[in-house]
Image (cartoon, rainbow, N blue to C red; front, top):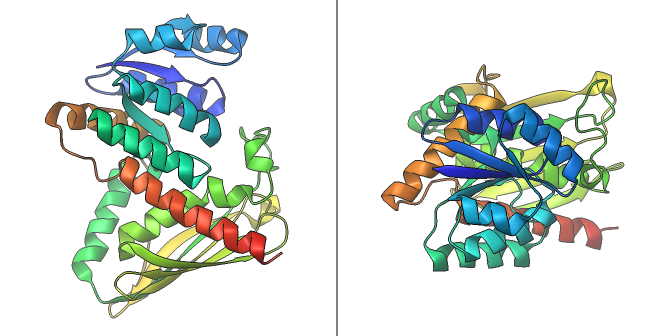
Length: 294
């Protein structure tokens, strides 16, 4: 399947571009970016064509992969879906529920395949952990702690404007926390949000099973305070999600290959636009609660 890459930032350079080149059944055709100079540099590195016209890229490919801010992705993916292009989306799929729903509706109407790249969902070790915990059962709760620092030395996303917006953590690492806890404890039926200093957010989640979990997240932790952990506890003890060895590049390559398979089979992927829209719905609910509580 012929793919185009939308975006030229660190994520496109470090993950999406190399991942598409490593994916089975995928041919990376070209790159489009808002900055022609950056698009030329990335395209040269990837040995593909740099496009200055998004419409021309759409005409030359079967699918699009996105590495742009969520509000940009939502509008550009909608345009791609409208002309029948399959979508490999980054999380979150949009930064508003209305935009996410509009994109989901267009994907359904066009009958195209969609996959949303929640990194852990495409790492075999994490998938195996999800399977093991679901088979074991008896879980009474869980937690996810994602305390990151945009100011940590060498962080490639330190200059990202949308991540530095207030509550940036909610929309950046929040999707990963929600995706992982859903994978471990099942769909979330209700959410309560409390804000802390800066972009620190605490979520209390009630899963449809009645189990509860918590998630804490920030992008402004002191570099020495960076901490990531996801776990469940219950009748058999506590199970902590191991740090996966699979790289983001390999995970993205698998996501691209699975998008191709979904497009060819006509079957929905478990982590598709419907799943991505539900995550946006939860994030929007949290943001609304945080705004009301100020």
